[in-house]
Length: 267
Figure (tube, rainbow, N blue to C red):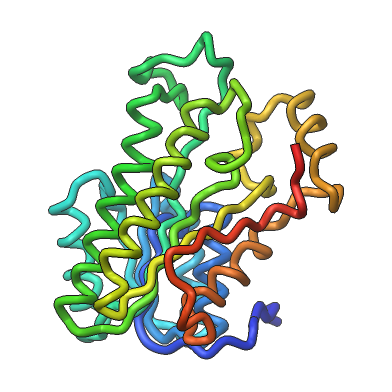
């Protein structure tokens, strides 16, 4: 029996989720399927198994899916993916987009490097900004511009982070700085495309139980948990609900906002 994650929103048509094989993106994709989206296209990183599993779950929910691994830092590749997705989905144009791609290689500031060391997930400042800022900018502009050109009243949500607002941890300096830049870019893009009926907003999660946060040292985890007034970390599903809301027509006058979902975190 499938567990319902219906949030009582009435979405319609084609949604694109960049980074749907990750914890938050995966739950967002399922939430969209439960709330009216009939066609869902998504990208995945290195986890093709998770992508195939998601596609199977979408089929169970009678949602048409298309997925591919795409370099989100390549503007031409992103535009090609969007065109391929629309074609694969029978010409159904994109009405909703979510970018949930992000990396956070927790490491002491004095050990952080500008470039990647080339060993596993040991990413440098350039890598973090390439994924979290450049990729977010490229996908947002590509989708918003397509909506504008096609005359689609669309909605876009970027998964930002409270780390770009109220976190100053030295082990995530590159992540925090990139998320602050992403949030500002989101607001500027929202102003640019609002006259064309394309709404752009952000959802800024606090501490969420995802694999990305598995590298957080135990002492840092305990310290951060103590700052959350609700006393716990969130499940990725708890981020999906506000994302679906902001995408829906129920949020038709919300634009350029960065909604913090953090369990009342206070430093």
